[in-house]
Image (tube, rainbow, N blue to C red; front, side):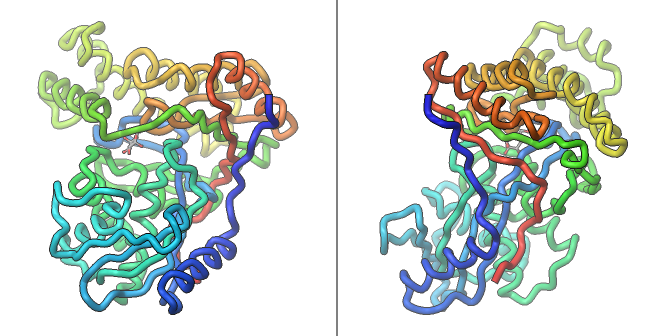
Length: 399
Ligand code: GLA
């Protein structure tokens, strides 16, 4: 077995330098500025966002960096360290509409389109993108791409930054994903990237867009948040995510409520839906996960980290057996992390692949990383990668 691989985050200075250099090499001039937006992990509250529920993400130190200048012909032109040198992704803005844009640039052009739909000024841009958010790991690299451009656009248009602006930018970035890319996701990822705060967990309430910053200082208890990228392929627009969402909406209709957030009597809901029906299982996950997220907020406020083990276990099992979005790699990562010394572990994000988070005593980090890597090798899975999930700053200008 190879040594476990840790994906280190660049400093914001380093990321800014890479993106600015790439811009100069590609376009022969300097960018107007460089903006960064972080990937995220959700501590708890999975598949609750599109049910008007609560979730609890942190921003990762790993960011997407965009070196940007306005373009003078209303065309978006993008290059990236992840493309061949000199290769461009481009589209005139008048061709951007649902069903007409493909490729990674859809997250950028889609965000500009979303802002314009919402009557926000948003110039077309020439840009160079670089990123240390792992791709396809369920850590929201694509939402981070949208959010880096959302803050860049607002700044280029001279709109002052504010909490209210960021809520509107979340909506525009969601338009890009829902309408231009065509993935029916719920807003957790974009909110995390735009509204998080360093050293805090963001308690997001999707019923009213309220966000509460709660200090999240595992380090004072000599704990770290270990993120395990299982490398199991992760896709949200292949129908599975949409079918989960459709089941929740159908369950809410049968219960006569606007969303599952309104259900306060689980037993009564199960009597109507049937506890073993698909809709019953999906609804039970959402209803209990919202309750767990409320409980998590109290735990975080009191710093009672010893409670996390049970809470994460209940969440993971609910996602595994009721929501049915785990895959063997996620289950093995959780089990092997717990077996080798993690206090708590669960899958994070949409599922169907992606990542696991584990709360681990600092001195056991290496042991847990070794243990998970070994379990993966034994199961015949590709080697996982590891990140340290320090709660970091939201999207911002970095140069
Ligand atoms: C993905 C989606 C989010 C959210 C999570 C599950 O990350 O993009 O909107 O639904 O899955 O919590």
